[in-house]
Image 1 (cartoon, rainbow, N blue to C red):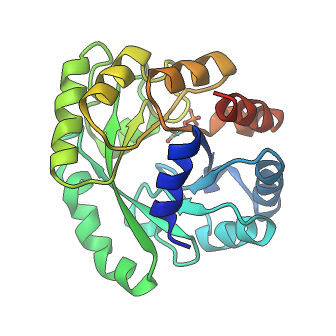
Image 2 (cartoon, rainbow, N blue to C red; image 1 turned 135 degrees about the horizontal axis):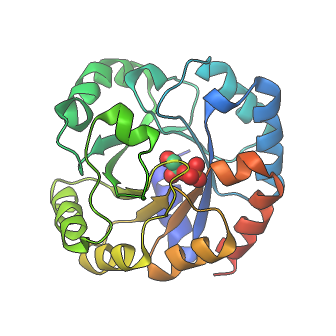
Image 3 (cartoon, rainbow, N blue to C red; image 1 turned 60 degrees about the horizontal axis):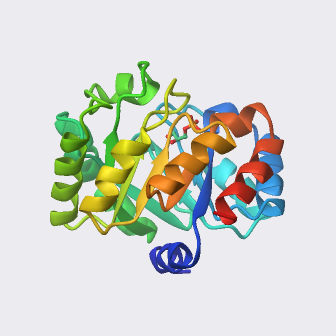
Length: 243
Ligand code: 1GP
């Protein structure tokens, strides 16, 4: 499977939704349940990863892949989250921050391992936007988010990411963020760059998901809301696909 082509084809046809499975929140059995729900709801992608993971990621990815043929993309918070059995790796560079470890250091540490794994690598400009509360990603990455009311800074960052040759942008408010990325900031970035835009963090309901899509998100990511209520997966998938 060529995942980047699958993504590009998918977003040219309709808006897409990714379900984030944080291995820290799951056993093999509960990950299988999530994968079953995702399949029934026609979720487009499963992302696996988190800011802090102490569980066995390989068995979680295996469990998901046993149940579903939805592409599984690693969304790693650290080089320790690179496992070979996923379909692709979001190779994130935290371009909103100024912590060299998350801009290039961890990428250097994991590059050899990734090459040996033969994972498909998708270079992504990861942009943390202030979501009104300190999230795990902000704490762990030790980086400042872009202020939510400074779309011009988000635009400049996105342009730089595009000029550096990154293939997608991920506008992230942080898992469980109080506020999702504002629609005005998404729209400003959408107007400035051609890259596919992923938006996640604090998207809990139909209204928030619709606002992100209307502003220009190509893919929305839902994590926490689905952990709390499995029924959310189907409801939000329907909203996304009928947008
Ligand atoms: C976090 O964007 C994802 O990286 C999802 O966030 O858990 O708040 O949905 P939530």
